[in-house]
Amino acid sequence: MDIMQKTVDQIRLHQKNDESFIKEISLLAEQKGDAVYQASMQVLTSLDLSEKTAKLYWQEALEHRDQLSQTTGRKIELITAVSDYLSYVIDRSYTPRLIDTALYKDVLHDSVIDKLTALNNRAYFDQTFEQQLSLAKRYNTDLSLLFIDIDNFKEINDHFGHQAGDAALRRVAEIVTENKRDSDIAARFGGEEFTLLMPHTGSINGLILGERIREAVAESTFIASDDTFSMTISGGLASYPLHGKSTAEIIAIADQAVYQAKGAGKNLISVFKKDKRRYLRVKFSHPVIVKELEIEATSTHTGIGQNICIGGVLFKSSEALTIGSKIQIHTKIKKDAPLLLIGTVVRVEAFGPNEYDIGVAISFKEMEKIARDEIAGLLRAEN
Image 1 (cartoon, rainbow, N blue to C red):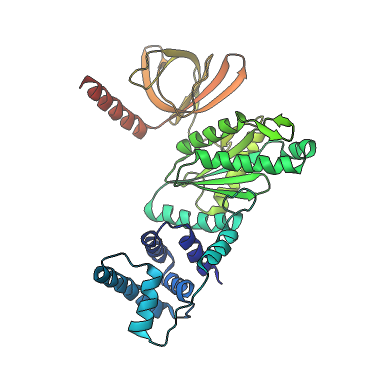
Image 2: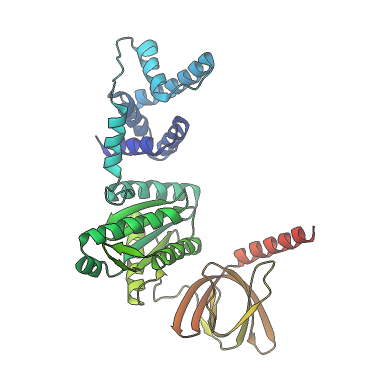
């Protein structure tokens, strides 16, 4: 079975119904060409057809399925329609291959699922990442990759035993599954490393989801026989098109971000940052007044500015803000030049009791959107 046939197999396994499968095959064919139809017919019928013939048979079999459904008054399964089309429309000598469906699904399941954690395995991740990146490029959408690595995992194995280590891996996999969205794709990359692909997701929203997973792991209690222990994870985030244009480049950058998180003390989700800054940063030490962007929010926080650039603001505060929260910042660059900014909290780093560095990403496009949403919210509240 070649790579394309395996890809079709996996698509078939993970789709809820025939309509979803047909749609995914059409999208894949737009990217990869008529070889997708050839592989699809091979998977469904075991027939070796040319690409041109396979495409013709696929299209006519779908039309035949629609006709059968109209005639019978019920939805006809795709495999039934294809078999009927080949047997009675094309070649009466064709005999459909009968297989044990349950056994077939078990074989497919074992080929793409990690047995220990029940997440997708590395092979499935590799193929799916290529497909998702192709879709992101085609439709000009964001795609983020989160790398997760369990902190001090060797010490857990050495102290509590490998069974406890296996249980910890399963529990982390469960936490990832519980917190991810339906559209996100989680996999065990290898050892104590996990990945989470997030289609249609930029780095800020990817960081927010990563933080949610990190907090859930840190707040969990893990059980090993009569002992209990806590555990943390470190993560690295990279996004298309911001950090890379190929799967290899994005994986390498996400991996570097993990090392940055480990080097910063672990139990941290890091977005990769190069030493070369995208924007020129200017130091400033004026007071800042911060207010969360919520209709009911009345409390304010204060801090002292550290630096500012077109893309963001860094300030010190005695209070930790929530990563992902939308805030207003009132400050001034010059004595008589007040400045109002709107942004998203993307970094909270503790340096001591009641001493935090707060990083805020500023997007003028996002500022416009937030302002519109706030005005709409106020109008709804008035009504």
